[in-house]
Length: 127
Image (tube, rainbow, N blue to C red):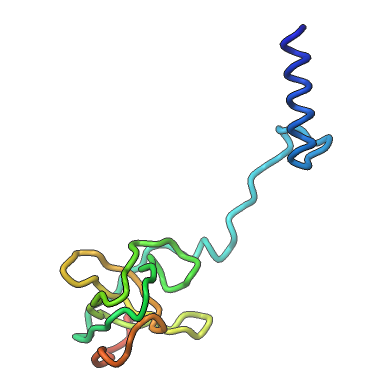
């Protein structure tokens, strides 16, 4: 009886603190993933570009060509990326599929994140 009373008090306190009021734990569900997150399946691109770029700041290499997609690796300012191909996403932003120099790490980087004074030519789109 003592344990049941403590459990009831703890559950009530938790509901008040979290703002659930009379909602029980069994009726609370996790929010579904957004529709946009579903578009972030890892996608690579063909190597049709011999160019490279130098990072203008520290940014995340992504698994797909949208900023909300999963991170592959953190790339520090001044790091060289070798370009493979380019894509313009549905928001109109250009992204490059690239490899971090001296690694086997590949992913997508927004073109806005490069110091273009040190980059070379655009070789082509990914498809």
